[in-house]
Amino acid sequence: MQLILKHCHQQIIFYEDKNFQGRSYECSSDCPDMTSFFNRCNSIRVDSGNWILYEHANYRGSQYYLRRGDYPDFQKWMGFNDSIRSCHLTPQHRGPFRMRIYEKEDFRGQMMEFTEDCFHVYEQFHYNDIHSCNVLDGHWVFYEEPNYKGRQYYLKPGEYRRYNDWGASNSRVGSFRKVQYIQ
Image (cartoon, rainbow, N blue to C red; front, side, top):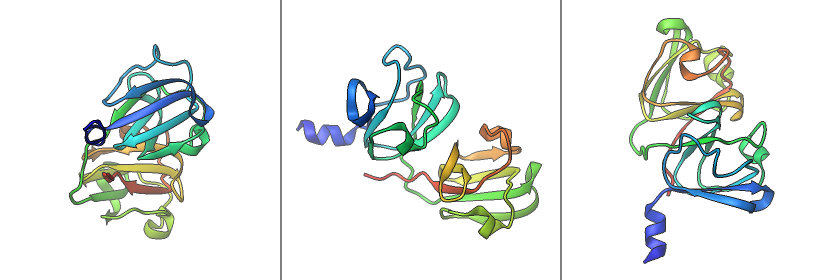
């Protein structure tokens, strides 16, 4: 019975040391401030769910998208350091995905609509910069570099009139992918 219940709940486990060693903290929902639970985070095990992790408390700083799997050191989730201070469980979206990206602010200039992941924005869009975006369906993650590398930015449905609306300090987007629920 416990095994069935474990799979019904979303869970992520943070470890202070690499390779799932040291003090650990289990989490099954959003947590705006994990500062008191551990000093550093060097490995993570995602038992279920999709999670966005943040470098600072209150969902600020660098973002990292993790889905089910083992991450034995912070470089495996493309972390810049061992600081994770808040986390957000993403909704379990199984429906359609649709997003429009624009070359200029306020939904101006060339527009392309996407329903699938894009591993190299320049090859598809012919621009390295996305200045605005409208997420019509689903949740997405922007990556600063092609092939899902570099800084990450989580986008839920809504209008993003400028790149700083999704938390970026510049308009460079190299790739993006859907945040799909995987059991």
